[in-house]
Length: 348
Image 1 (cartoon, rainbow, N blue to C red):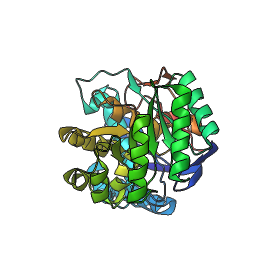
Image 2 (cartoon, rainbow, N blue to C red; image 1 turned 90 degrees about the horizontal axis):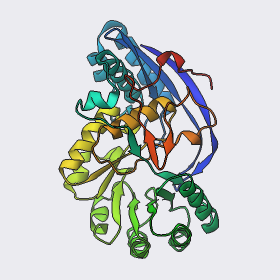
Image 3 (cartoon, helix red, strand yellow; image 1 turned 120 degrees about the horizontal axis):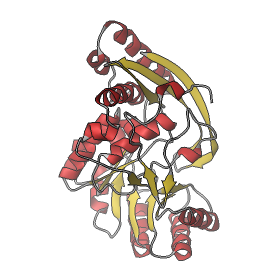
């Protein structure tokens, strides 16, 4: 097991209700298994995952375990609840090697009967004035996207509703709009926002309330706008979210959930209970983006996912083998993740 660090700047800062993200730092993980070298990525996002230092310690400890034991021992040493990004890095490298050894793309390793060339994706638009937001969505639509997620919650509800209304008036009724509040609203604010966003045909609001308020989210459902939970999955088990009937949609971030395998398992569990999964990145480098893409590709009829985030980075770890056209991302059909581990660098 080999671990190398990297740091990548964003092409422009991404403002959310929680923070402004300007850089992504993490680790490339390589692991030899079944005669293949797999590559993974551990890119922690504090507040969602462990810190960068804790991630490094987790990977260093895992490397010590790997020197004396097998991959099962390594996985057991990486707790998804405490070091999810570190576990994601190793688990992705292991799965990449496994799929390479089996001669299949990773999504077919999850489901051998699946064949998927493209996954629908949404564009993500950060905070801005109504005109700035509408201009950004218009550019996304002109680039082929038919689904856009708008960051809300940093401004007042009045201002955010005005932003969404301006967007809807600019792009018309054929574009799917989603809103992401990152847990910024109170129950009264969320209900007010949902009541006013429903006539604007907003598909769902992501994390309208604080992560621990499952009861509030459950009560907010059925108001004309779907409820999607994201941050709630950081501290709460998916089973508790599903048992609380707190969501119409689950936002599954493999980096936060401890790996692609965990994310795929949770997606299938959600589907069984009538909750739709949406797979997204945490503004990752190309290796983790590909891992998330393969998870989405393994889910039949998946809704538009938040995977088209590569353009957020000023540089990357390797060339991206995917393309986004007409609102969908191509899925590599070569073995494993679809990227040559020897081409993945650490200085970008």
